[in-house]
Image (cartoon, rainbow, N blue to C red):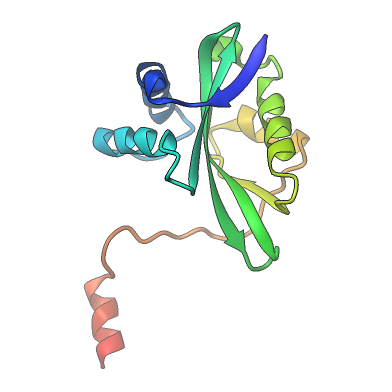
Length: 160
């Protein structure tokens, strides 16, 4: 039987082994420092961290996957957004409909959130097909990030 529950600190070893599998798969396009992955786990199980929720996905009481979901507000939607930061299943549990169950469960948990959002790499074709079957569509935005300080050239332009 498949079940979903909140992660706890006692789940650390099971979750972190899956996190490492996830971060060494085609679902991730870059390296992430192990200390960052560890911090994220502890934030995901901390009830005081209101922007991140960790879910343990179990089959017959055994950890077979995990999800990190986070939350933000979308001006274009006029409401809160559930953002799937990570969703991972061990290979033996893929194709059993568990991914669909996770999305349905979260839609029941957050019925008033007008948008659910996620990222998927080009190489992660099976996941992309699942998301499309569930009704997700591609947004034609180019996503950009800034990690750390602004570039030096940018600072000079703004100071002149």
